[in-house]
Image 1 (cartoon, one colour):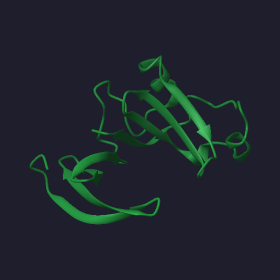
Image 2 (cartoon, rainbow, N blue to C red; image 1 turned 30 degrees about the vertical axis):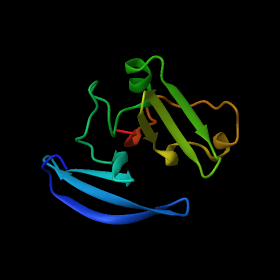
Image 3 (tube, rainbow, N blue to C red; image 1 turned 90 degrees about the horizontal axis):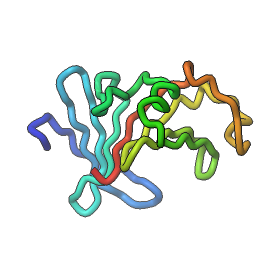
Length: 128
């Protein structure tokens, strides 16, 4: 895969077993990919050095994401587990630090966030 060192494994998600690959890239970057039927389905990383074309990635704030992607959507909820994700465009998603969100925000329709404090902890690309 891309000429990078790869460690192969299997992961279970929603009761199904998938082939997985962990790629190691220069700059202490690790990218975890899940394959379905031999095709890459999703890749994600918690590495601070990995950035999208606009320079966003782990450590970026919610305010920076909103300014960079004005049509993006910020979603918070608790269906199938708590989540706080910023959907940027197409198949690009940023997972936010859940520890910086008050517990009751996951069940409310609206909740205030300090957009300069809430930060990305994982960047996710689906159907890459």
